[in-house]
Image (tube, rainbow, N blue to C red; front, top):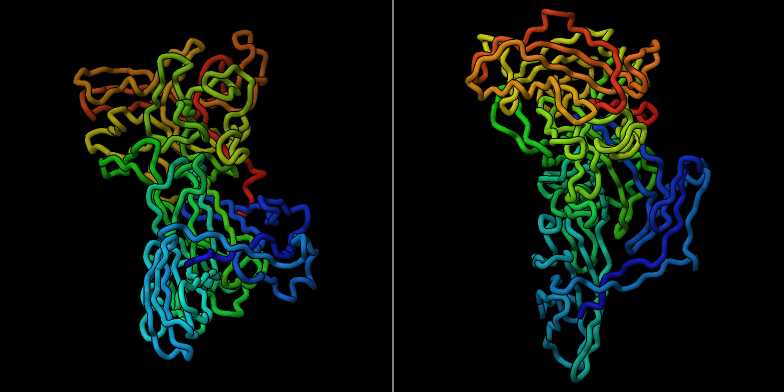
Amino acid sequence: MVSGINEPTTISTVKSRASKANLTKSEGGAIRREEKFVHASGMDVLTTMESPVQIGNSTDKLADSQAKESSEVSLKAASGAEKFAAVPMITENQYRILIYDATGSTLLQNVAASSGTNPALQVEAGTTYRWFSFSINERTVPDISNGKVAAADLANKDVLFASGTIDTKLGENFLNITFDHKTTRFDVDVDTRGIFGSVNTFRSLQLGTEASDGEYTTLLYTADLDIFSGNFGTPTEMATANTAAHVVNKDISTADMVKTVSLYTVIPAGRTIDDQALRISPVFSINLDHAVLYPPNTTPVTTREFGSTTDRLRIANLRFSPQAGSTYSLGMRAIESGILANGTIWARSDLWYDGTAARTFDKYRFRSDPAHAPYPGKSDTEQTEYWHWMSLTPASPIKTGDPCLEVYPKGIWRLPTRSEAESLVQQRTPYPYSGFSNPNSNADTYDWIALVNLSFDGDGGSSRGNFSEYSNRILFAFNGIMDADGKLISSRSQVDSRSNTARDGIYTHTSRWTSDEWESVPDANCTNCGTTFAHVAYTTDYRGPNDFTVNYAGRSTRFDIGYAQETQFRQIRCVRNQSWSGEL
């Protein structure tokens, strides 16, 4: 019978080279480094690694030179010694038990057994036997061939092993098996709340190291297991397809928004991971809040891909030597990348608020695509993306707070200042962008609504990622304004491209808040006003479905810096909080 699996009850001594000012204490008392930004296609990532802490059957030690050059921060077990307790194996997980004669040369029993069930093996009394047992801690267990378990059967598996001898006597004999972990485990928490979608499919997660010269070396290996010695043979690289075998929700509360990916690997003995050398490469897709279009394709897309095997995200790790039987906790919080223009990083689309009962967290979100027409309700208590000036929700009073600061992770985004808005809309020349170009006009519709817009290109090097071309520029759709009574005015939603009724001179407007109150000149017509950046245009010559033109000729294409009463409603386009921009 299986007594359990050895797990520690104490925390090993851990040393950190990070300064005390950069250390934070995580659950269980482990020390980890401050989060740092790294950059990938379509997303920015905050990565962390908890200092190596033993939770298996061997002790982690930093390289000897580490102690000489570091300011030591230690966590020590109360007794000063490692303690282990046999944690029960999950019922019905299988293990294989092999009974040999006393010399270990003749196999007498080879049984696949299940935890919680007595295998009832039959052997002779008064005899000494050697026994060996292994498991991958799952509902199945591989077999042996020539005294070995094949590497292919152990790729990304929690390999457990135990062995010993038993002297049998007449009657019942009890063989209490306590397993040790044989592989090294890395748990990677992948948090997608900052890219506004739950995980749809997790395709792979590579783990390796990158040297100062850029040379990449994987840390994911498998190997044959010799059941007589309990040792692994020569490691071979793990196939990418095996890396997403263990993906679970980290917590009920965050559901599919935060996944834990567990990687079990056979790392060659003596391997040392240098400071700042660890890299992860996740590849996954998320479910979008709303379907988007990718011109020229007109089929709605409901998921978005992130990451690639060549996007190597740096982990701010300390120098350490991974040990068999130990677990290392890594973390990444994905954040939607913005578009850099004149020193300011702009969000790709407008802020909206999901106040539905089903959305219990992360209510502050960016639209899946800036070309979407807004979905206002009948009043300010129902609509989701028109805000009073400095209101925490679309239904909140004025001056209750900056809603951009509430976007997950809190503090990453904020409202733009007046000067940031001026730098974009008055120092650069915008242009109307048409994703779906009609050779007879400039028609462009999105879900049958005319895409009246003015757009700005970002600076060279701005991240593109797997976004539509609408999202790869700073596009401001003419979604109108909403008065203090919640009435929507001058929205492009007036131009329903399914209509057969021709119309001319449809007035449309775009306007968004800044964080500044209006203080340019005293204005008798506008007391208690917030600063906006805005533009007006006219749609003309609507002739029928998908056949219209937009006329900007009546005025300059440049935006105005203006004002609106704080109790009116405007849309919001957030910018990156520069104090968080870090190592982009």
